Image (cartoon, rainbow, N blue to C red; front, top):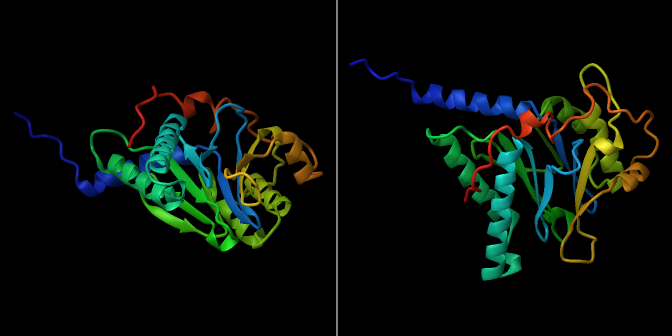
Length: 263
């Protein structure tokens, strides 16, 4: 009888990490920026139905890049967890940190298990506070690591180039208009040229602490986007054109059949 094929644990983890990183890198970048009144999320997403940024609870938002069906399952699981905790205890007991920890456990378990492929996703879980110093942005990677981000953060696509542009132009305490213009310019910045992303191809949402209702999440519609961005030149999407899904062609975003929400 032949001996079973052996792969060292270190090599196995490296291969799984490379697999996940390649899947995430194929998507478009997503930017989270803190501004004077809350947290802003901006990404290039031609789809009007498949959102990459969504509400989880009153003051908490979820944003993701990667394989759509996988991060959508995570979003649904987060909404269920938040609703159950808020109902069983108190709405104030639902926190961004608690949800980030739950996501980290789920992603870490999936990544380290040998029975299924790792999730090709990265996540932001953000919570807006009463004042700017209480705002929180947590970044979760495919292997379950959690990072506490400050000011701005980028994931997916050519994140290094976008982050370098943000580092140069970001200003603390900026208005929504200023933060949005910087974020959109960063998403359109490449190593060879700067392109203008069409307003209809942008997905923009905010956690706005100045909203009077308990729920602070709001989407910014194209009409308001046009007013906030002002005159930016041509409105074409630039190289690549429109796509079917939130991270490119539909086959890239959701080839696999949906699976049951984890958690």
